[in-house]
Image 1 (tube, rainbow, N blue to C red):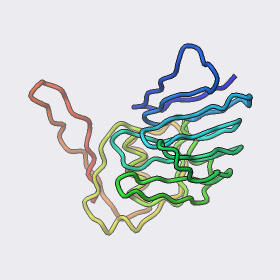
Image 2: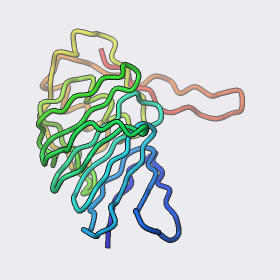
Image 3: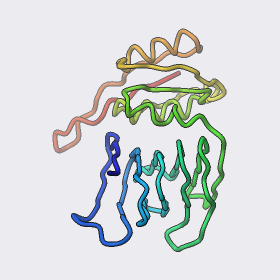
Image 4: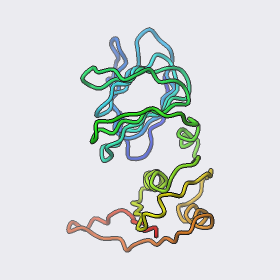
Length: 202
């Protein structure tokens, strides 16, 4: 009865049949709506072990990012390291953030709906800074967004987009924030593979 959504650039591995605990392995981002059962549902990421009984949560763990995030919408989850070191029990509308490169973690209060809007085709920003905005836009539209002027990092955004293209989103944001943007020429590798789009914000 458990359902879920898998975001772009993500993969989920699981056995054909569960025996005992329901273990799945995630790389990327996924939203889970877990049915309560006696056997726990456990999400494994490169660094975390997230134990779920019955709940709704979003897990972000991309291989090319040192940060891993768990955002809880409903219910309760237990978060621990792969070596068994326990962090804490996460409550609804809270985000757990692990920086594996610095070996640091923290929990902050958030509006969970802004992180799960992608399951309904909604791109939601709630007071997110330019760096976070660039990272989320990059994943959403499969582009690389580079910020040239570090002064822009002090700006934050509050907006909701539904079925809008990248050009429309950037155009709207540039009307409320003093930045310009341009798409750099796409490069081709020696194997004739066209690299992803690069957007420069300055």
